[in-house]
Amino acid sequence: MDCVRYSIANVKRVIPMDILRTVFTPRVNGYRDDMIDLDETLLSVVVRPRVLVDCNLVGGREVYIPLDGLPVYRQNDYTSVYRIPKTKTQGSSIMSVLNITFSDPTKVSSYGVAAGDQNTFMLQGAQSVMDAMGSMPVTSTAYVQLIAENVVMVRDTVVLPANIYLRCVLANDENMSHIQMRSFPAFAKLVELSIKSYVFNQYIIPMDMGQLFGGMNIGRFKEIIDGWSDAEELYQTYLREKWTKIAMMNDREQWTRFMRLTMGGQR
Image (tube, rainbow, N blue to C red; front, top):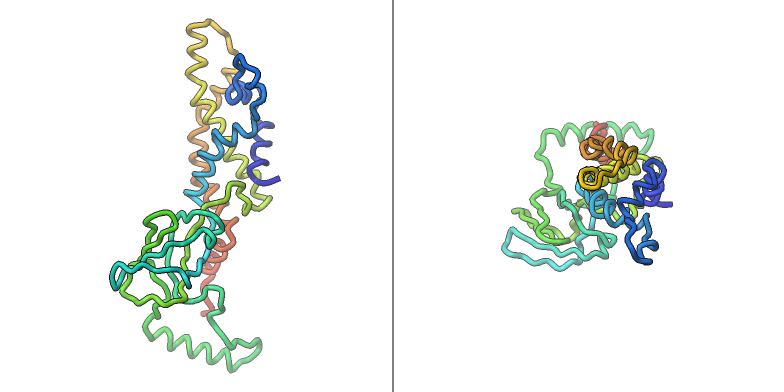
């Protein structure tokens, strides 16, 4: 079971089924209405158009994409445009671009380090002192922006080498397959709050109109939905304060980079 299916199963455990069927699979005269799939309706009405979109806006998957071999359109001597095919982005769209790096990010930056070699450590210390007095080498540029779907424009005075890498954030796949199993309950809570918010906003006025014009006493049904009046605020707070952090910790590239920046380098 993937993350999204788990969240739908959880919603059917915490929200009364009568409320879900009434709101998402209304009964009208016609035999076809009895064949409506509740799970697919929840996905198509709430999860895909809202939850997955919000997760892309605050999260995503950080990757490095090699641009070597891609055709380049040069507007002038300082502006280059790259059109990145989806074969290089795992079939996903680029949500945001961070920078262009001029070296292979997978290679180790320091060579010749032998464990227990005191001379090597002394040379490294001396090299660190010399590096501190020298100018900072240009290894990347942040003058890059997304101008269309998977189309990137780089503006810099530096001549771009052939073997450059684009650091960017890709959209999550539809099943959120990169989310670890221990984070399933957190995502399920996000889906639960979004569905409660949808039910409250869509049904609170019709319920009052039924009471006003039809004299119907809805009772417990209305009481439960009235209790979800703060679901939208809780959803926004949970998305901003909790899910953003959980999404980053589930992205190995972002989390590893954050930990490296926190601990610092060898010096």
